[in-house]
Image (cartoon, rainbow, N blue to C red; front, side):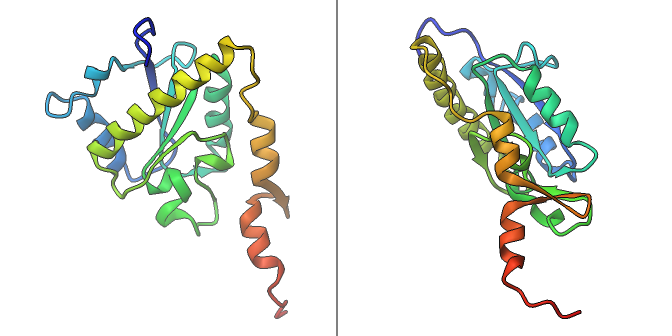
Length: 181
């Protein structure tokens, strides 16, 4: 990270989880782990945030909120999926209302798997996110397009089947199966 960079601000959102990962996120703020030593400041306003840390899986009720928080953030921004539920849907993946990990709603830059994810892994993901943020800042300064847009992410990951949003990978897995009806 450059010496003139501002302190990165982080917003945390619990999409829908058992709160195990949220407890570990709070542990990162304690003196034992001290995530603030990297200059990270926790904020509640997405317009001030550089890093978006999401715990829990995305479902039909919170997908709009996740997208809204992401859209309110100013470029450059980094998304960190924390915990196996945020990475892939975790133990809730097969639930009727769960759509999957955070990447079904918005583009994810850093994944930190674990159930519950350890504070060390969260801090590693945040530090990795700071590196990605610096790369994105340099790309913006050079006038380059950052690549993935929200619309491209949603189009690539989602398909609507019988009025329900389904991940493209799930559709591919079931396309070759014979119909037993």
